[in-house]
Amino acid sequence: MHIREQLARVQPEREAIQEHAGGVQAGLEALKAKAKQVETDRNKLELEVQAKKQQIERYSLQQFQTKKNDEYRALAHEIDVCKENITEVEDQELDLMEQAETLQKETAAAMREAGQTRESAESQLAQLAAREQNLRDELTGLENSRAGLTTDIEERMLRHYERLLRNKGDSVVVGIEHGVCGGCHMRFPVQLLVTCQAEKEMVTCPNCGRILYYTPDMDLAAVD
Image (cartoon, rainbow, N blue to C red; front, side, top):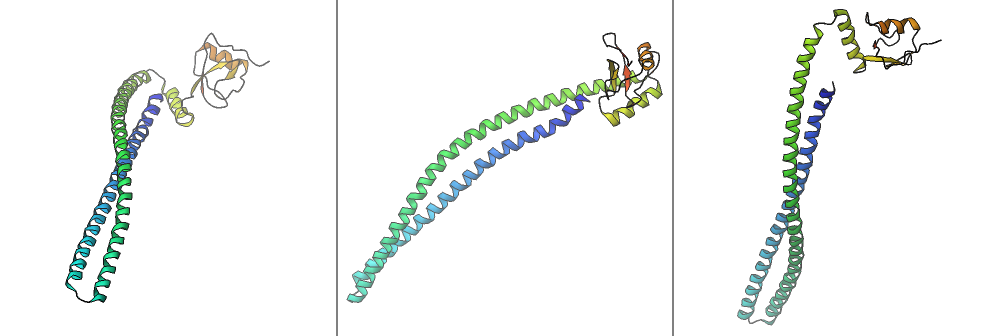
């Protein structure tokens, strides 16, 4: 039963290791995605700057070709607007470059952490798999041994024992110490203690039904 309990904890432990490693990897992927988006935004701004510069070149050419003062001044105004736009966009580019630099450092640190976490997870999972296999092998051996031991037990006693296992778990066979049941702590009369001490028949607690046993180091003092 103890080995089965240990085996039952293996899968949750495995899932916890995998979940932690997955979380670290997901954090890394999120940083990579953010860095990629920042680079995409910066490229868009660069294209916008290039487009504004081309506009300025066109406006300058039109200025050179026009002979009307109003058109010349209008084109000069458009050139000034484009230059202001370029300044604004370049400021945004600088912000994105700073973000990209910060994200690059964070991504590098996250990659190191993800690598270490992955190696640790692989090692832990390998150890867990080995422990699981050892537990299964031990359980198989114990089950085979138990099957052999039950052949010499009286059928009535075995049925009673199995029923207690289902209802009370592993606290099925209990000792008598100071004249009380080791399971429910009910105090016993003298005759029951004597019967148990004699080891001639199966003795059970009249209160909880557990199977009772006695060893010489136990105090069998009964009630007055």
